[in-house]
Image 1: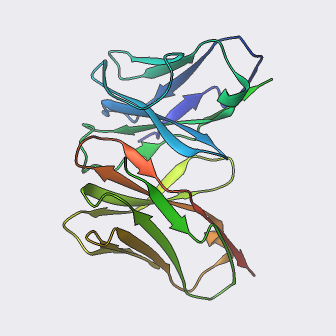
Image 2: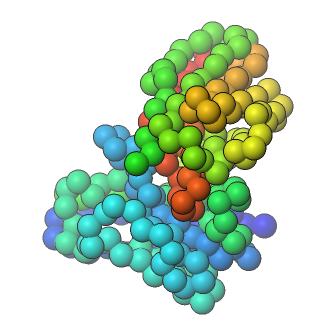
Length: 114
Length: 112
């Protein structure tokens, strides 16, 4: 089975721009979660989608948004980019998104905001 | 809010040594705890998942223990190898939602 894939792997943007990141979960998985990883804050939860609905949301401003399509692929959008948005963005998928399941992480998208 | 701390932040050991990584969490109402490995610039690889009702899990040279009442978990690595060099993260899932609260990580270097 193919693992979680994320595109693009690297991205450079300038302040004020917007960006869209994509995540394709493992086939059959319906839950996709997004995380931001920075040296200062570590790994922080952004949001989780299940069957096209946002089910959980972390403590991030409204500039961070996401969606999930009927094939479970998910996109994350960041508008009006700030320097502090530079980070590794990871997505994770699981079958049903229940608390007892292992989540499988993708390789991440590294975003640099200049 | 759940807070997860890992000690030490960095560790350097000679090849062949046994070592212990520590993880502590503030809210004992967890559903499970998971240990991950992250190689530089890469995503996370799950190592061990311990359900809240379990005390330990083992996989090869790795053994993870969980003491929910004291808010602690340890990851024991036996006979360390240079390939074990990576950052190790612990994460907990609370009873109230399906999201991970990650620790700060321990950067491990195994010297040949």
